[in-house]
Length: 151
Image 1 (cartoon, one colour):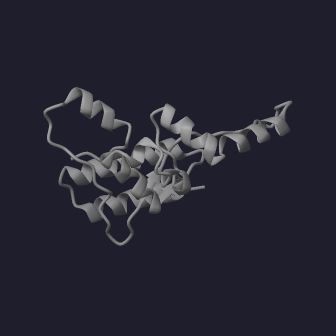
Image 2 (cartoon, helix red, strand yellow; image 1 turned 60 degrees about the vertical axis):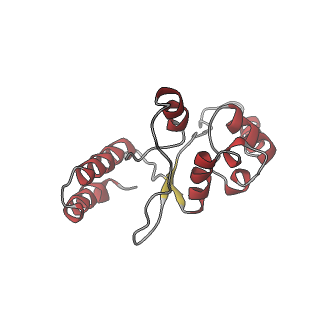
């Protein structure tokens, strides 16, 4: 079992043709959730073209632009309305559709200046838990380490 994303689907299909595998949503405990990933767009404070950049960013987020851009790039959208559009490949592929279904409970990452350290702590905690360490103990330790790093 691995916790991963839709970018692994083509790799598994191409590299492990005989593997019997499938995709499921993240297990639900007290709160079912997944993490939204994707691009981060920004306009720098020193830009000489802030208004034009803002108009471009707004343009890229229109469903009729966002959908084809993601499909052509082999990515999945983080917007439910684009994800639910039946014209795209992710709704014609049972395994990719699972990731679209997970959008209903997905949350954006807690970005901030300490995000790389926070991400490392979380990943290490997942690995430790999957390797058999006491989950409650591991998560309590992660909580103690992450809380002071939050924005």
